[in-house]
Amino acid sequence: IAQAAGATQYAAVATAAFRETDNGEDFLRHVNAELGIPVEIIGQEFEGQLGFYTAKVVCHDVAEDNLVAWDSGGGSFQLTSRVGNENVMYGYDIGSSVATTALVEAVQGKLYVGQSPNPVSMEEAQ
Picture 1 (cartoon, rainbow, N blue to C red):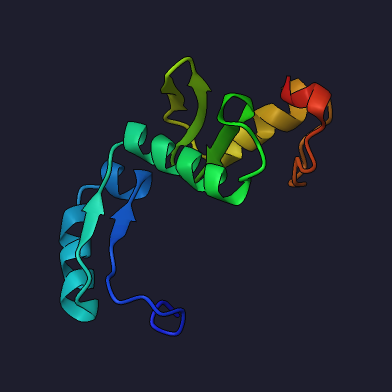
Picture 2 (picture 1 turned 90 degrees about the horizontal axis):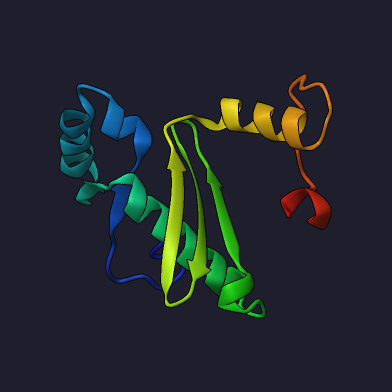
């Protein structure tokens, strides 16, 4: 896919699942051996920053001061926003199921039975 899109250089990162498991680094060594792509395990702070800058590229018409990136993965979730001259990441070591349940039940006031919380209204986001 990357080559078809014109990529000539590759990089890969691994997040919470690999940070938390005992054999994450060993598994990624095998990935590197098979694919020839080194994979770096990154910390949650950096994960949140990547999420923010990805959202900034995708939502290019939104001012940085009005942008909040919500990254809810299997093992952690991050909210990252611009405060003054720096990005601030609020991170939690809870995976998407816990975060999604909290959003649906505590914020949206609905019983969570596996449904997506999307779309989140502006009122709910505030």
